[in-house]
Length: 86
Image (cartoon, rainbow, N blue to C red; front, side, top):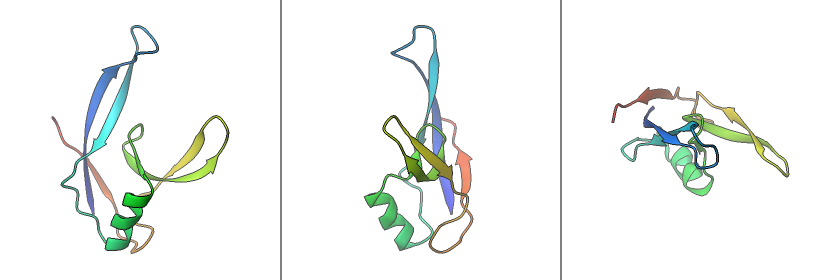
C-alpha cells in the first residue's frame, strides 16, 4: 500500500512567529484491503501531525498517545509513505 501525502507548513495562530506542519493524506490513496479502508472511515487513523497511519495507544484527559503503524493491521501489507510535492 502506498500512502501519498502532502506536507504544508502553516503559521501557528497561538504563537506569533512559530509554524507547524500539516500532513494531508491524498484522496487517491488506495487501501490494501477493504477492512483497513472501512476501519479508517470509522476511526480517524491518519495523523496530520506525524504524516503516518496511527493507532491510539492510550487516552488521557489532556491528550492521547499514538503508535505509528508501518503494516496494515488486517492483512499485514507494508505501508509505504510517500510525500508528494504540492
